Image 1 (cartoon, rainbow, N blue to C red):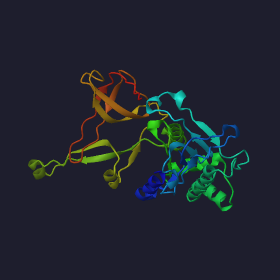
Image 2: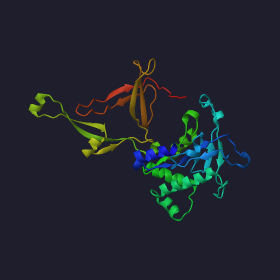
Image 3: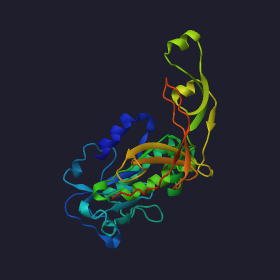
Image 4: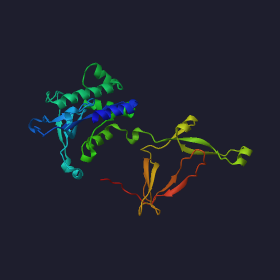
Length: 313
């Protein structure tokens, strides 16, 4: 239930301002699509993001989406889940809902009417966070598709709005528009800086009684990942790494053991590269974040035994 999912998002993430940029299409009964005049069949119906009941599609099933920015309906063929990997069998039919003058091709179509209403809601949400969209809304004018994309990306990067898409990955429906939305609206590596590091003075919190008696403190300076606790100390942050910088800066976020893979003991390290590159046989300097209450580990060197290529299916 798309409307229920939207309602849940708004309840769970009120500050994120979830906004639908797509609406789902359902097939009710036998398909009757008149391709000759580029009209969607009467048995293909749309669901409003506010329609919690979905009574009119209770006997239908999900077949496609309406892109509210491009104002086009995308309907995927009915294929078995085992055939989803065959791209040629999953090519969708695309139907433009508006002509070159931004007028409905089929004004009586239920899909077009619901899509126009949902697109207006999208414009209202953008008008709350973008001055240019507010200008269009107050003048009751229609922005171009490009301007909508720019405003939506800007609001997404500023975390003022959360675009919501719909799809069914098991059936291969909605995947391509989702990937397009990721490329169009989510930040690229040059839109986000690498994690800030801070120069921190670490106190040895050991419970050693002799250290307590002598009231000695062991001080060392290390670069540690910035956190809420570190930020509270107001230490100077050091920004390192940029996607265009030649030096390597990467975050190893996962280590798994795979038989006959990786290093001699089967270790495979997954890393997020912020700048530079990693190649086989490279020697890397590894800095481990300090565990609160414990001493910092000295930086160590690791050698890259080889690179593995990830793939999925």
